[in-house]
Length: 325
Image (tube, rainbow, N blue to C red; front, side, top):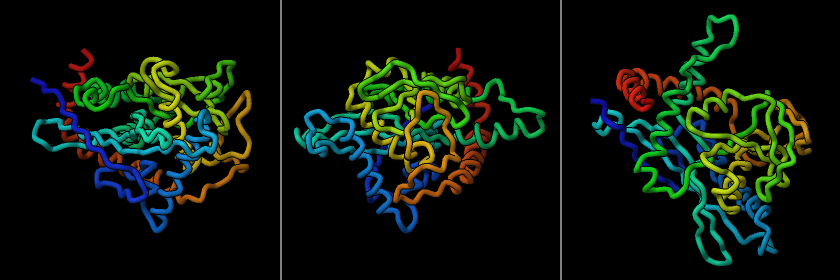
């Protein structure tokens, strides 16, 4: 008999005193900021950037531009695969809560935002390079992302998720630097102008296996579109304040991590191709180690292979087949 996996949720506040847990992927945006001599100033500056961006978008009944603050919680999801209480850190996302200072009220925001996964590291930094090692051209395994997608859908459909969160997740990522995006006439008051890519990316295909659709929007006063991955109806299932919380949080991280795109000194036009070589951009006053991030991805992929994929391959294969059925 193949047992159902057990998901457990843990939460930790992301503030200027945040320190990464041992199980946190160190390539995660928030973990990268929270290390080194500048850690506390990094965190303080990033959180202020998020608040400022939120208020720049939520301008109604906000004449001074300081009505709202954004509180962030890191949601860690552990997976017990054998019922023995030995949990693997499967997923890590962010949860926003909006503090309306004028009303002295807390407004629940969206869960998702950032997305972190050791299994995703394994797929992209271990499995995919090994698959292409001796090939003449780049290829993708037929079942690439299948297990990861089923694990994510299993979590989102679980009682554990439904007991904690009232809405389905929205994940916000950067655009692909090897695709061309064209502006459409569709405009949303908060999300801004919609863009459409010239072709599907590997990331799109990977997240599609997680059950997620994607749309690209460039919010007002942004430099480039953001990729919004979601279930259902992005424009109608979520309130303006919920969407602003996600934009403010994830655009801030992208300005720090990819300033060539998201902190460029000129905004994307009607036809836009992102470039990590773009020189006309500004740097934030926040220290972020991009080189270390790329090196750690492979190490974390090996960790997933050694502690999750290989030891439990038979159980994972059987569960995956049952899940598909």
